[in-house]
Length: 215
Ligand SMILES: C[S@@+](CC[C@H](N)C(=O)[O-])C[C@H]1O[C@@H](n2cnc3c(N)ncnc32)[C@H](O)[C@@H]1O
Image (cartoon, rainbow, N blue to C red; front, top):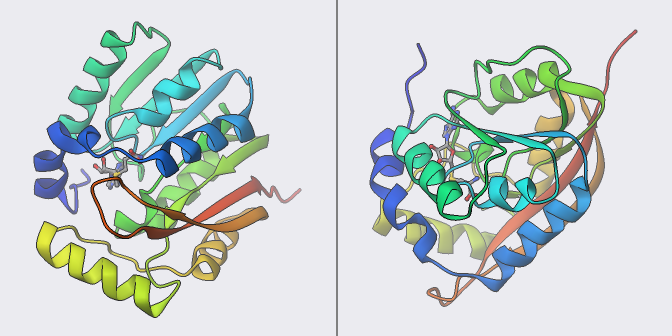
């Protein structure tokens, strides 16, 4: 049994999660879709309200959306119905124990979820198990420690909102974690994501990687 390490925050946030709007975030979702392309089956880990799952469902055959928080999955399911999308399967489940056979997915996306997991390496090892050898991993993740100014800004916002990141990564830390868990980093980039409702943006590391399988 895996407990949601930040359960009350995500349960409380679920209904209002999509109210914040951001052109940068929309561009980020477009970039993820463009990098993944028109493949068969994609896994969205820490799917939240399903923003990326829905965008991907318009271009791939099947999406599996996994999130530990039942409220998030409830909102994501409702959003998919409203959008008329029938090719997303929702799983209320931990990324630490994925319910899929080895080498199932053509691509896996983990958008802004690794830093809120206490042991992200457990999730990444599971992703390594279920991704195909030819698969693509796309991991855009807030990197709050990328600059001192960004870290201060994040800490101020977190103390007001009750948000808890278990990890304040730099983009280098994020790449090192992904590499340690059996992937080769193919692309890394640092971008700023600003929400219209906020005065300042936050720094995100955009990382694309491929699994490495030893013979
Ligand atoms: C910042 S939200 C990101 C949601 C979505 N990917 C997005 O960007 O809109 C982080 C999500 O990770 C989920 N989460 C945290 N720990 C998890 C775990 N161990 N397994 C699966 N999901 C988890 C939370 O419930 C939350 O929905």
